[in-house]
Length: 225
Image (cartoon, rainbow, N blue to C red):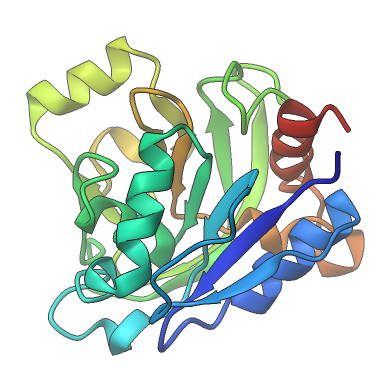
């Protein structure tokens, strides 16, 4: 059985090609491009990816308008059935705005756009996406965001920590995120949202391969490749 993935392009997405290339390079199968205005997904998908960018120009609030795009109803229904959904950067923002993940992404502390490679610590190595890493392992992944400051109330943060749903944490203070959280999972573990860009760290020519294991973990876990 071949790996079948899809990625959603919103108006203003600018990392959709990066995501598509990462999925194809790791799985050997080109993913299906889905336009935000579509209302249906292909019948069988192993993974849905929401890429980075500036959907709808970040007007109103980052990810807020994209969360109401027609395709998001199908994405939410698929996630509810257990289909894995990966949201990176703007995709993470969309997932929170759509209610698929708790919390919100706010303007960075310092009000500046951050674009650099940062160290992340793997907090949960037992998920579909992180099984290729060791718990506590420090990896280096690029970030590029202006609204990556993760916020949730203390009760929600305690629940995320207690349930092992913090997937990645910034080693150094990055953007003001509460408890330095860089990526979180939903209760079922099939939805991951993260600010850093693993799709930009899969080839040595691009500065490192620490993001590759995330995609390899998902492919192996889903189709045994």
